[in-house]
Picture 1 (cartoon, rainbow, N blue to C red):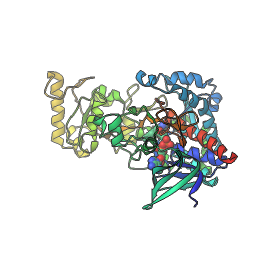
Picture 2 (picture 1 turned 60 degrees about the vertical axis):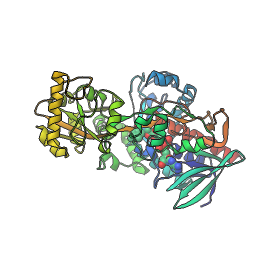
Picture 3 (picture 1 turned 180 degrees about the horizontal axis):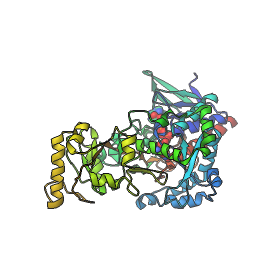
Picture 4 (picture 1 turned 45 degrees about the horizontal axis):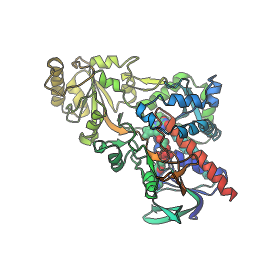
Length: 505
Ligand SMILES: Cc1cc2nc3c(=O)[nH]c(=O)nc-3n(C[C@H](O)[C@H](O)[C@H](O)COP(=O)(O)OP(=O)(O)OC[C@H]3O[C@@H](n4cnc5c(N)ncnc54)[C@H](O)[C@@H]3O)c2cc1C
């Protein structure tokens, strides 16, 4: 293997793969350097929604849409304060090009279900890759290998090589030794986000969030740090998606994990997709959502309580992010949600669902009992419920007694907002463990529309580019499906530009 390429990409998630494939499609010699034993990153863990306007899928469904309307609607998601800090020029640039990315992905053999609605988007714009986001990784990786792109795994980039102010390569630690990979045209930082970096979360979000983990344990912000070390400006680093509660990951592989995520079988699945009954698709989506989607806040607001492994309450369940911070501070960062008979029956029918992929599928208590027995149990009395999950039964019983006394007297336990109702009856549900996680961090390296990395003066740093979460460039992408759309669009565009430059020189 030669150590000199046209383009060296740091990180083999969605952005890095899309960049490497589209550079290789133009004839460039490209290398992905990936720190993990396999490619994927957060992209490989995701559900896979890709939100975009003006797509052929929309046209076929009779939906008339355009990127300008999408831009207006995207500004309605998330807190107003964040929208005021958004890089709307870059977002418009992105929205104008994301539908082409979807076409490109489809041409590579990926299949999508939808579009599905997600208000306040005025029309359905969410396209879900089939069977899940692992398909992006499998299809792009296979394509890269066919195009003779190089991949080095177990190689952590620790430094950028600069000569006369230009970034000309990377230093990577691999197999206990140090290697230098040189890049004739450019180094692309596509190293994901910093949701699991205690140091960066503490620095930018605050020390009280230090114990909250990232959903992807490998998301350590290394791309941001590499860029910063050569003078790059970092933007909106204090904004995170979460913390929010998630049930711990299933230990067993779900049926969706057994479905093909690449090769000819995926193509056949794609062709058959329009013929698959809606009920089957809903079932598939429901499986995904009980695996990965967060429990709704309303469950806590309507009166469910949080207990730790000792069977004790420890916070006001109605106040966020304080309750998430409190969960992260418990032993192993774990807690359980306790539902009594009233809540169990309330959360068994619309509009009271435990979790949702909005307007596509809704999961209720019975779905969790059936599909996630590892995190949901039901008993007719509190003691056997506690024993079944290994919580001290006396402690849990006393916790409920104390809580119930507080609901009538107003004192004697940690006060709470929302519905304050005694927990009673002969049907008890314990859900968990849950943990508090960050899903994404929204801070990124400052870039221009050519995805050149910019320094604090707004000047480009020669030879250095960024894509995906590392190269968010000040965009705050609230709502579902925009992060993957950006990762794949920014990767595709950058790879195309660098690939063209490589073959014209
Ligand atoms: C559970 C979950 C579900 C999600 N679902 C969705 C969804 O449905 N739709 C959506 O739009 N978004 C979703 N997201 C967010 C989305 O998946 C990510 O924002 C996006 O995939 C990021 O892509 P990326 O290529 O920028 O980073 P990643 O996919 O994280 O890739 C970064 C890669 O860089 C590697 N790397 C890091 N540092 C180094 C280094 N120093 N040297 C070498 N390699 C390095 C990492 O190991 C990783 O492989 C989800 C996120 C999670 C965690």
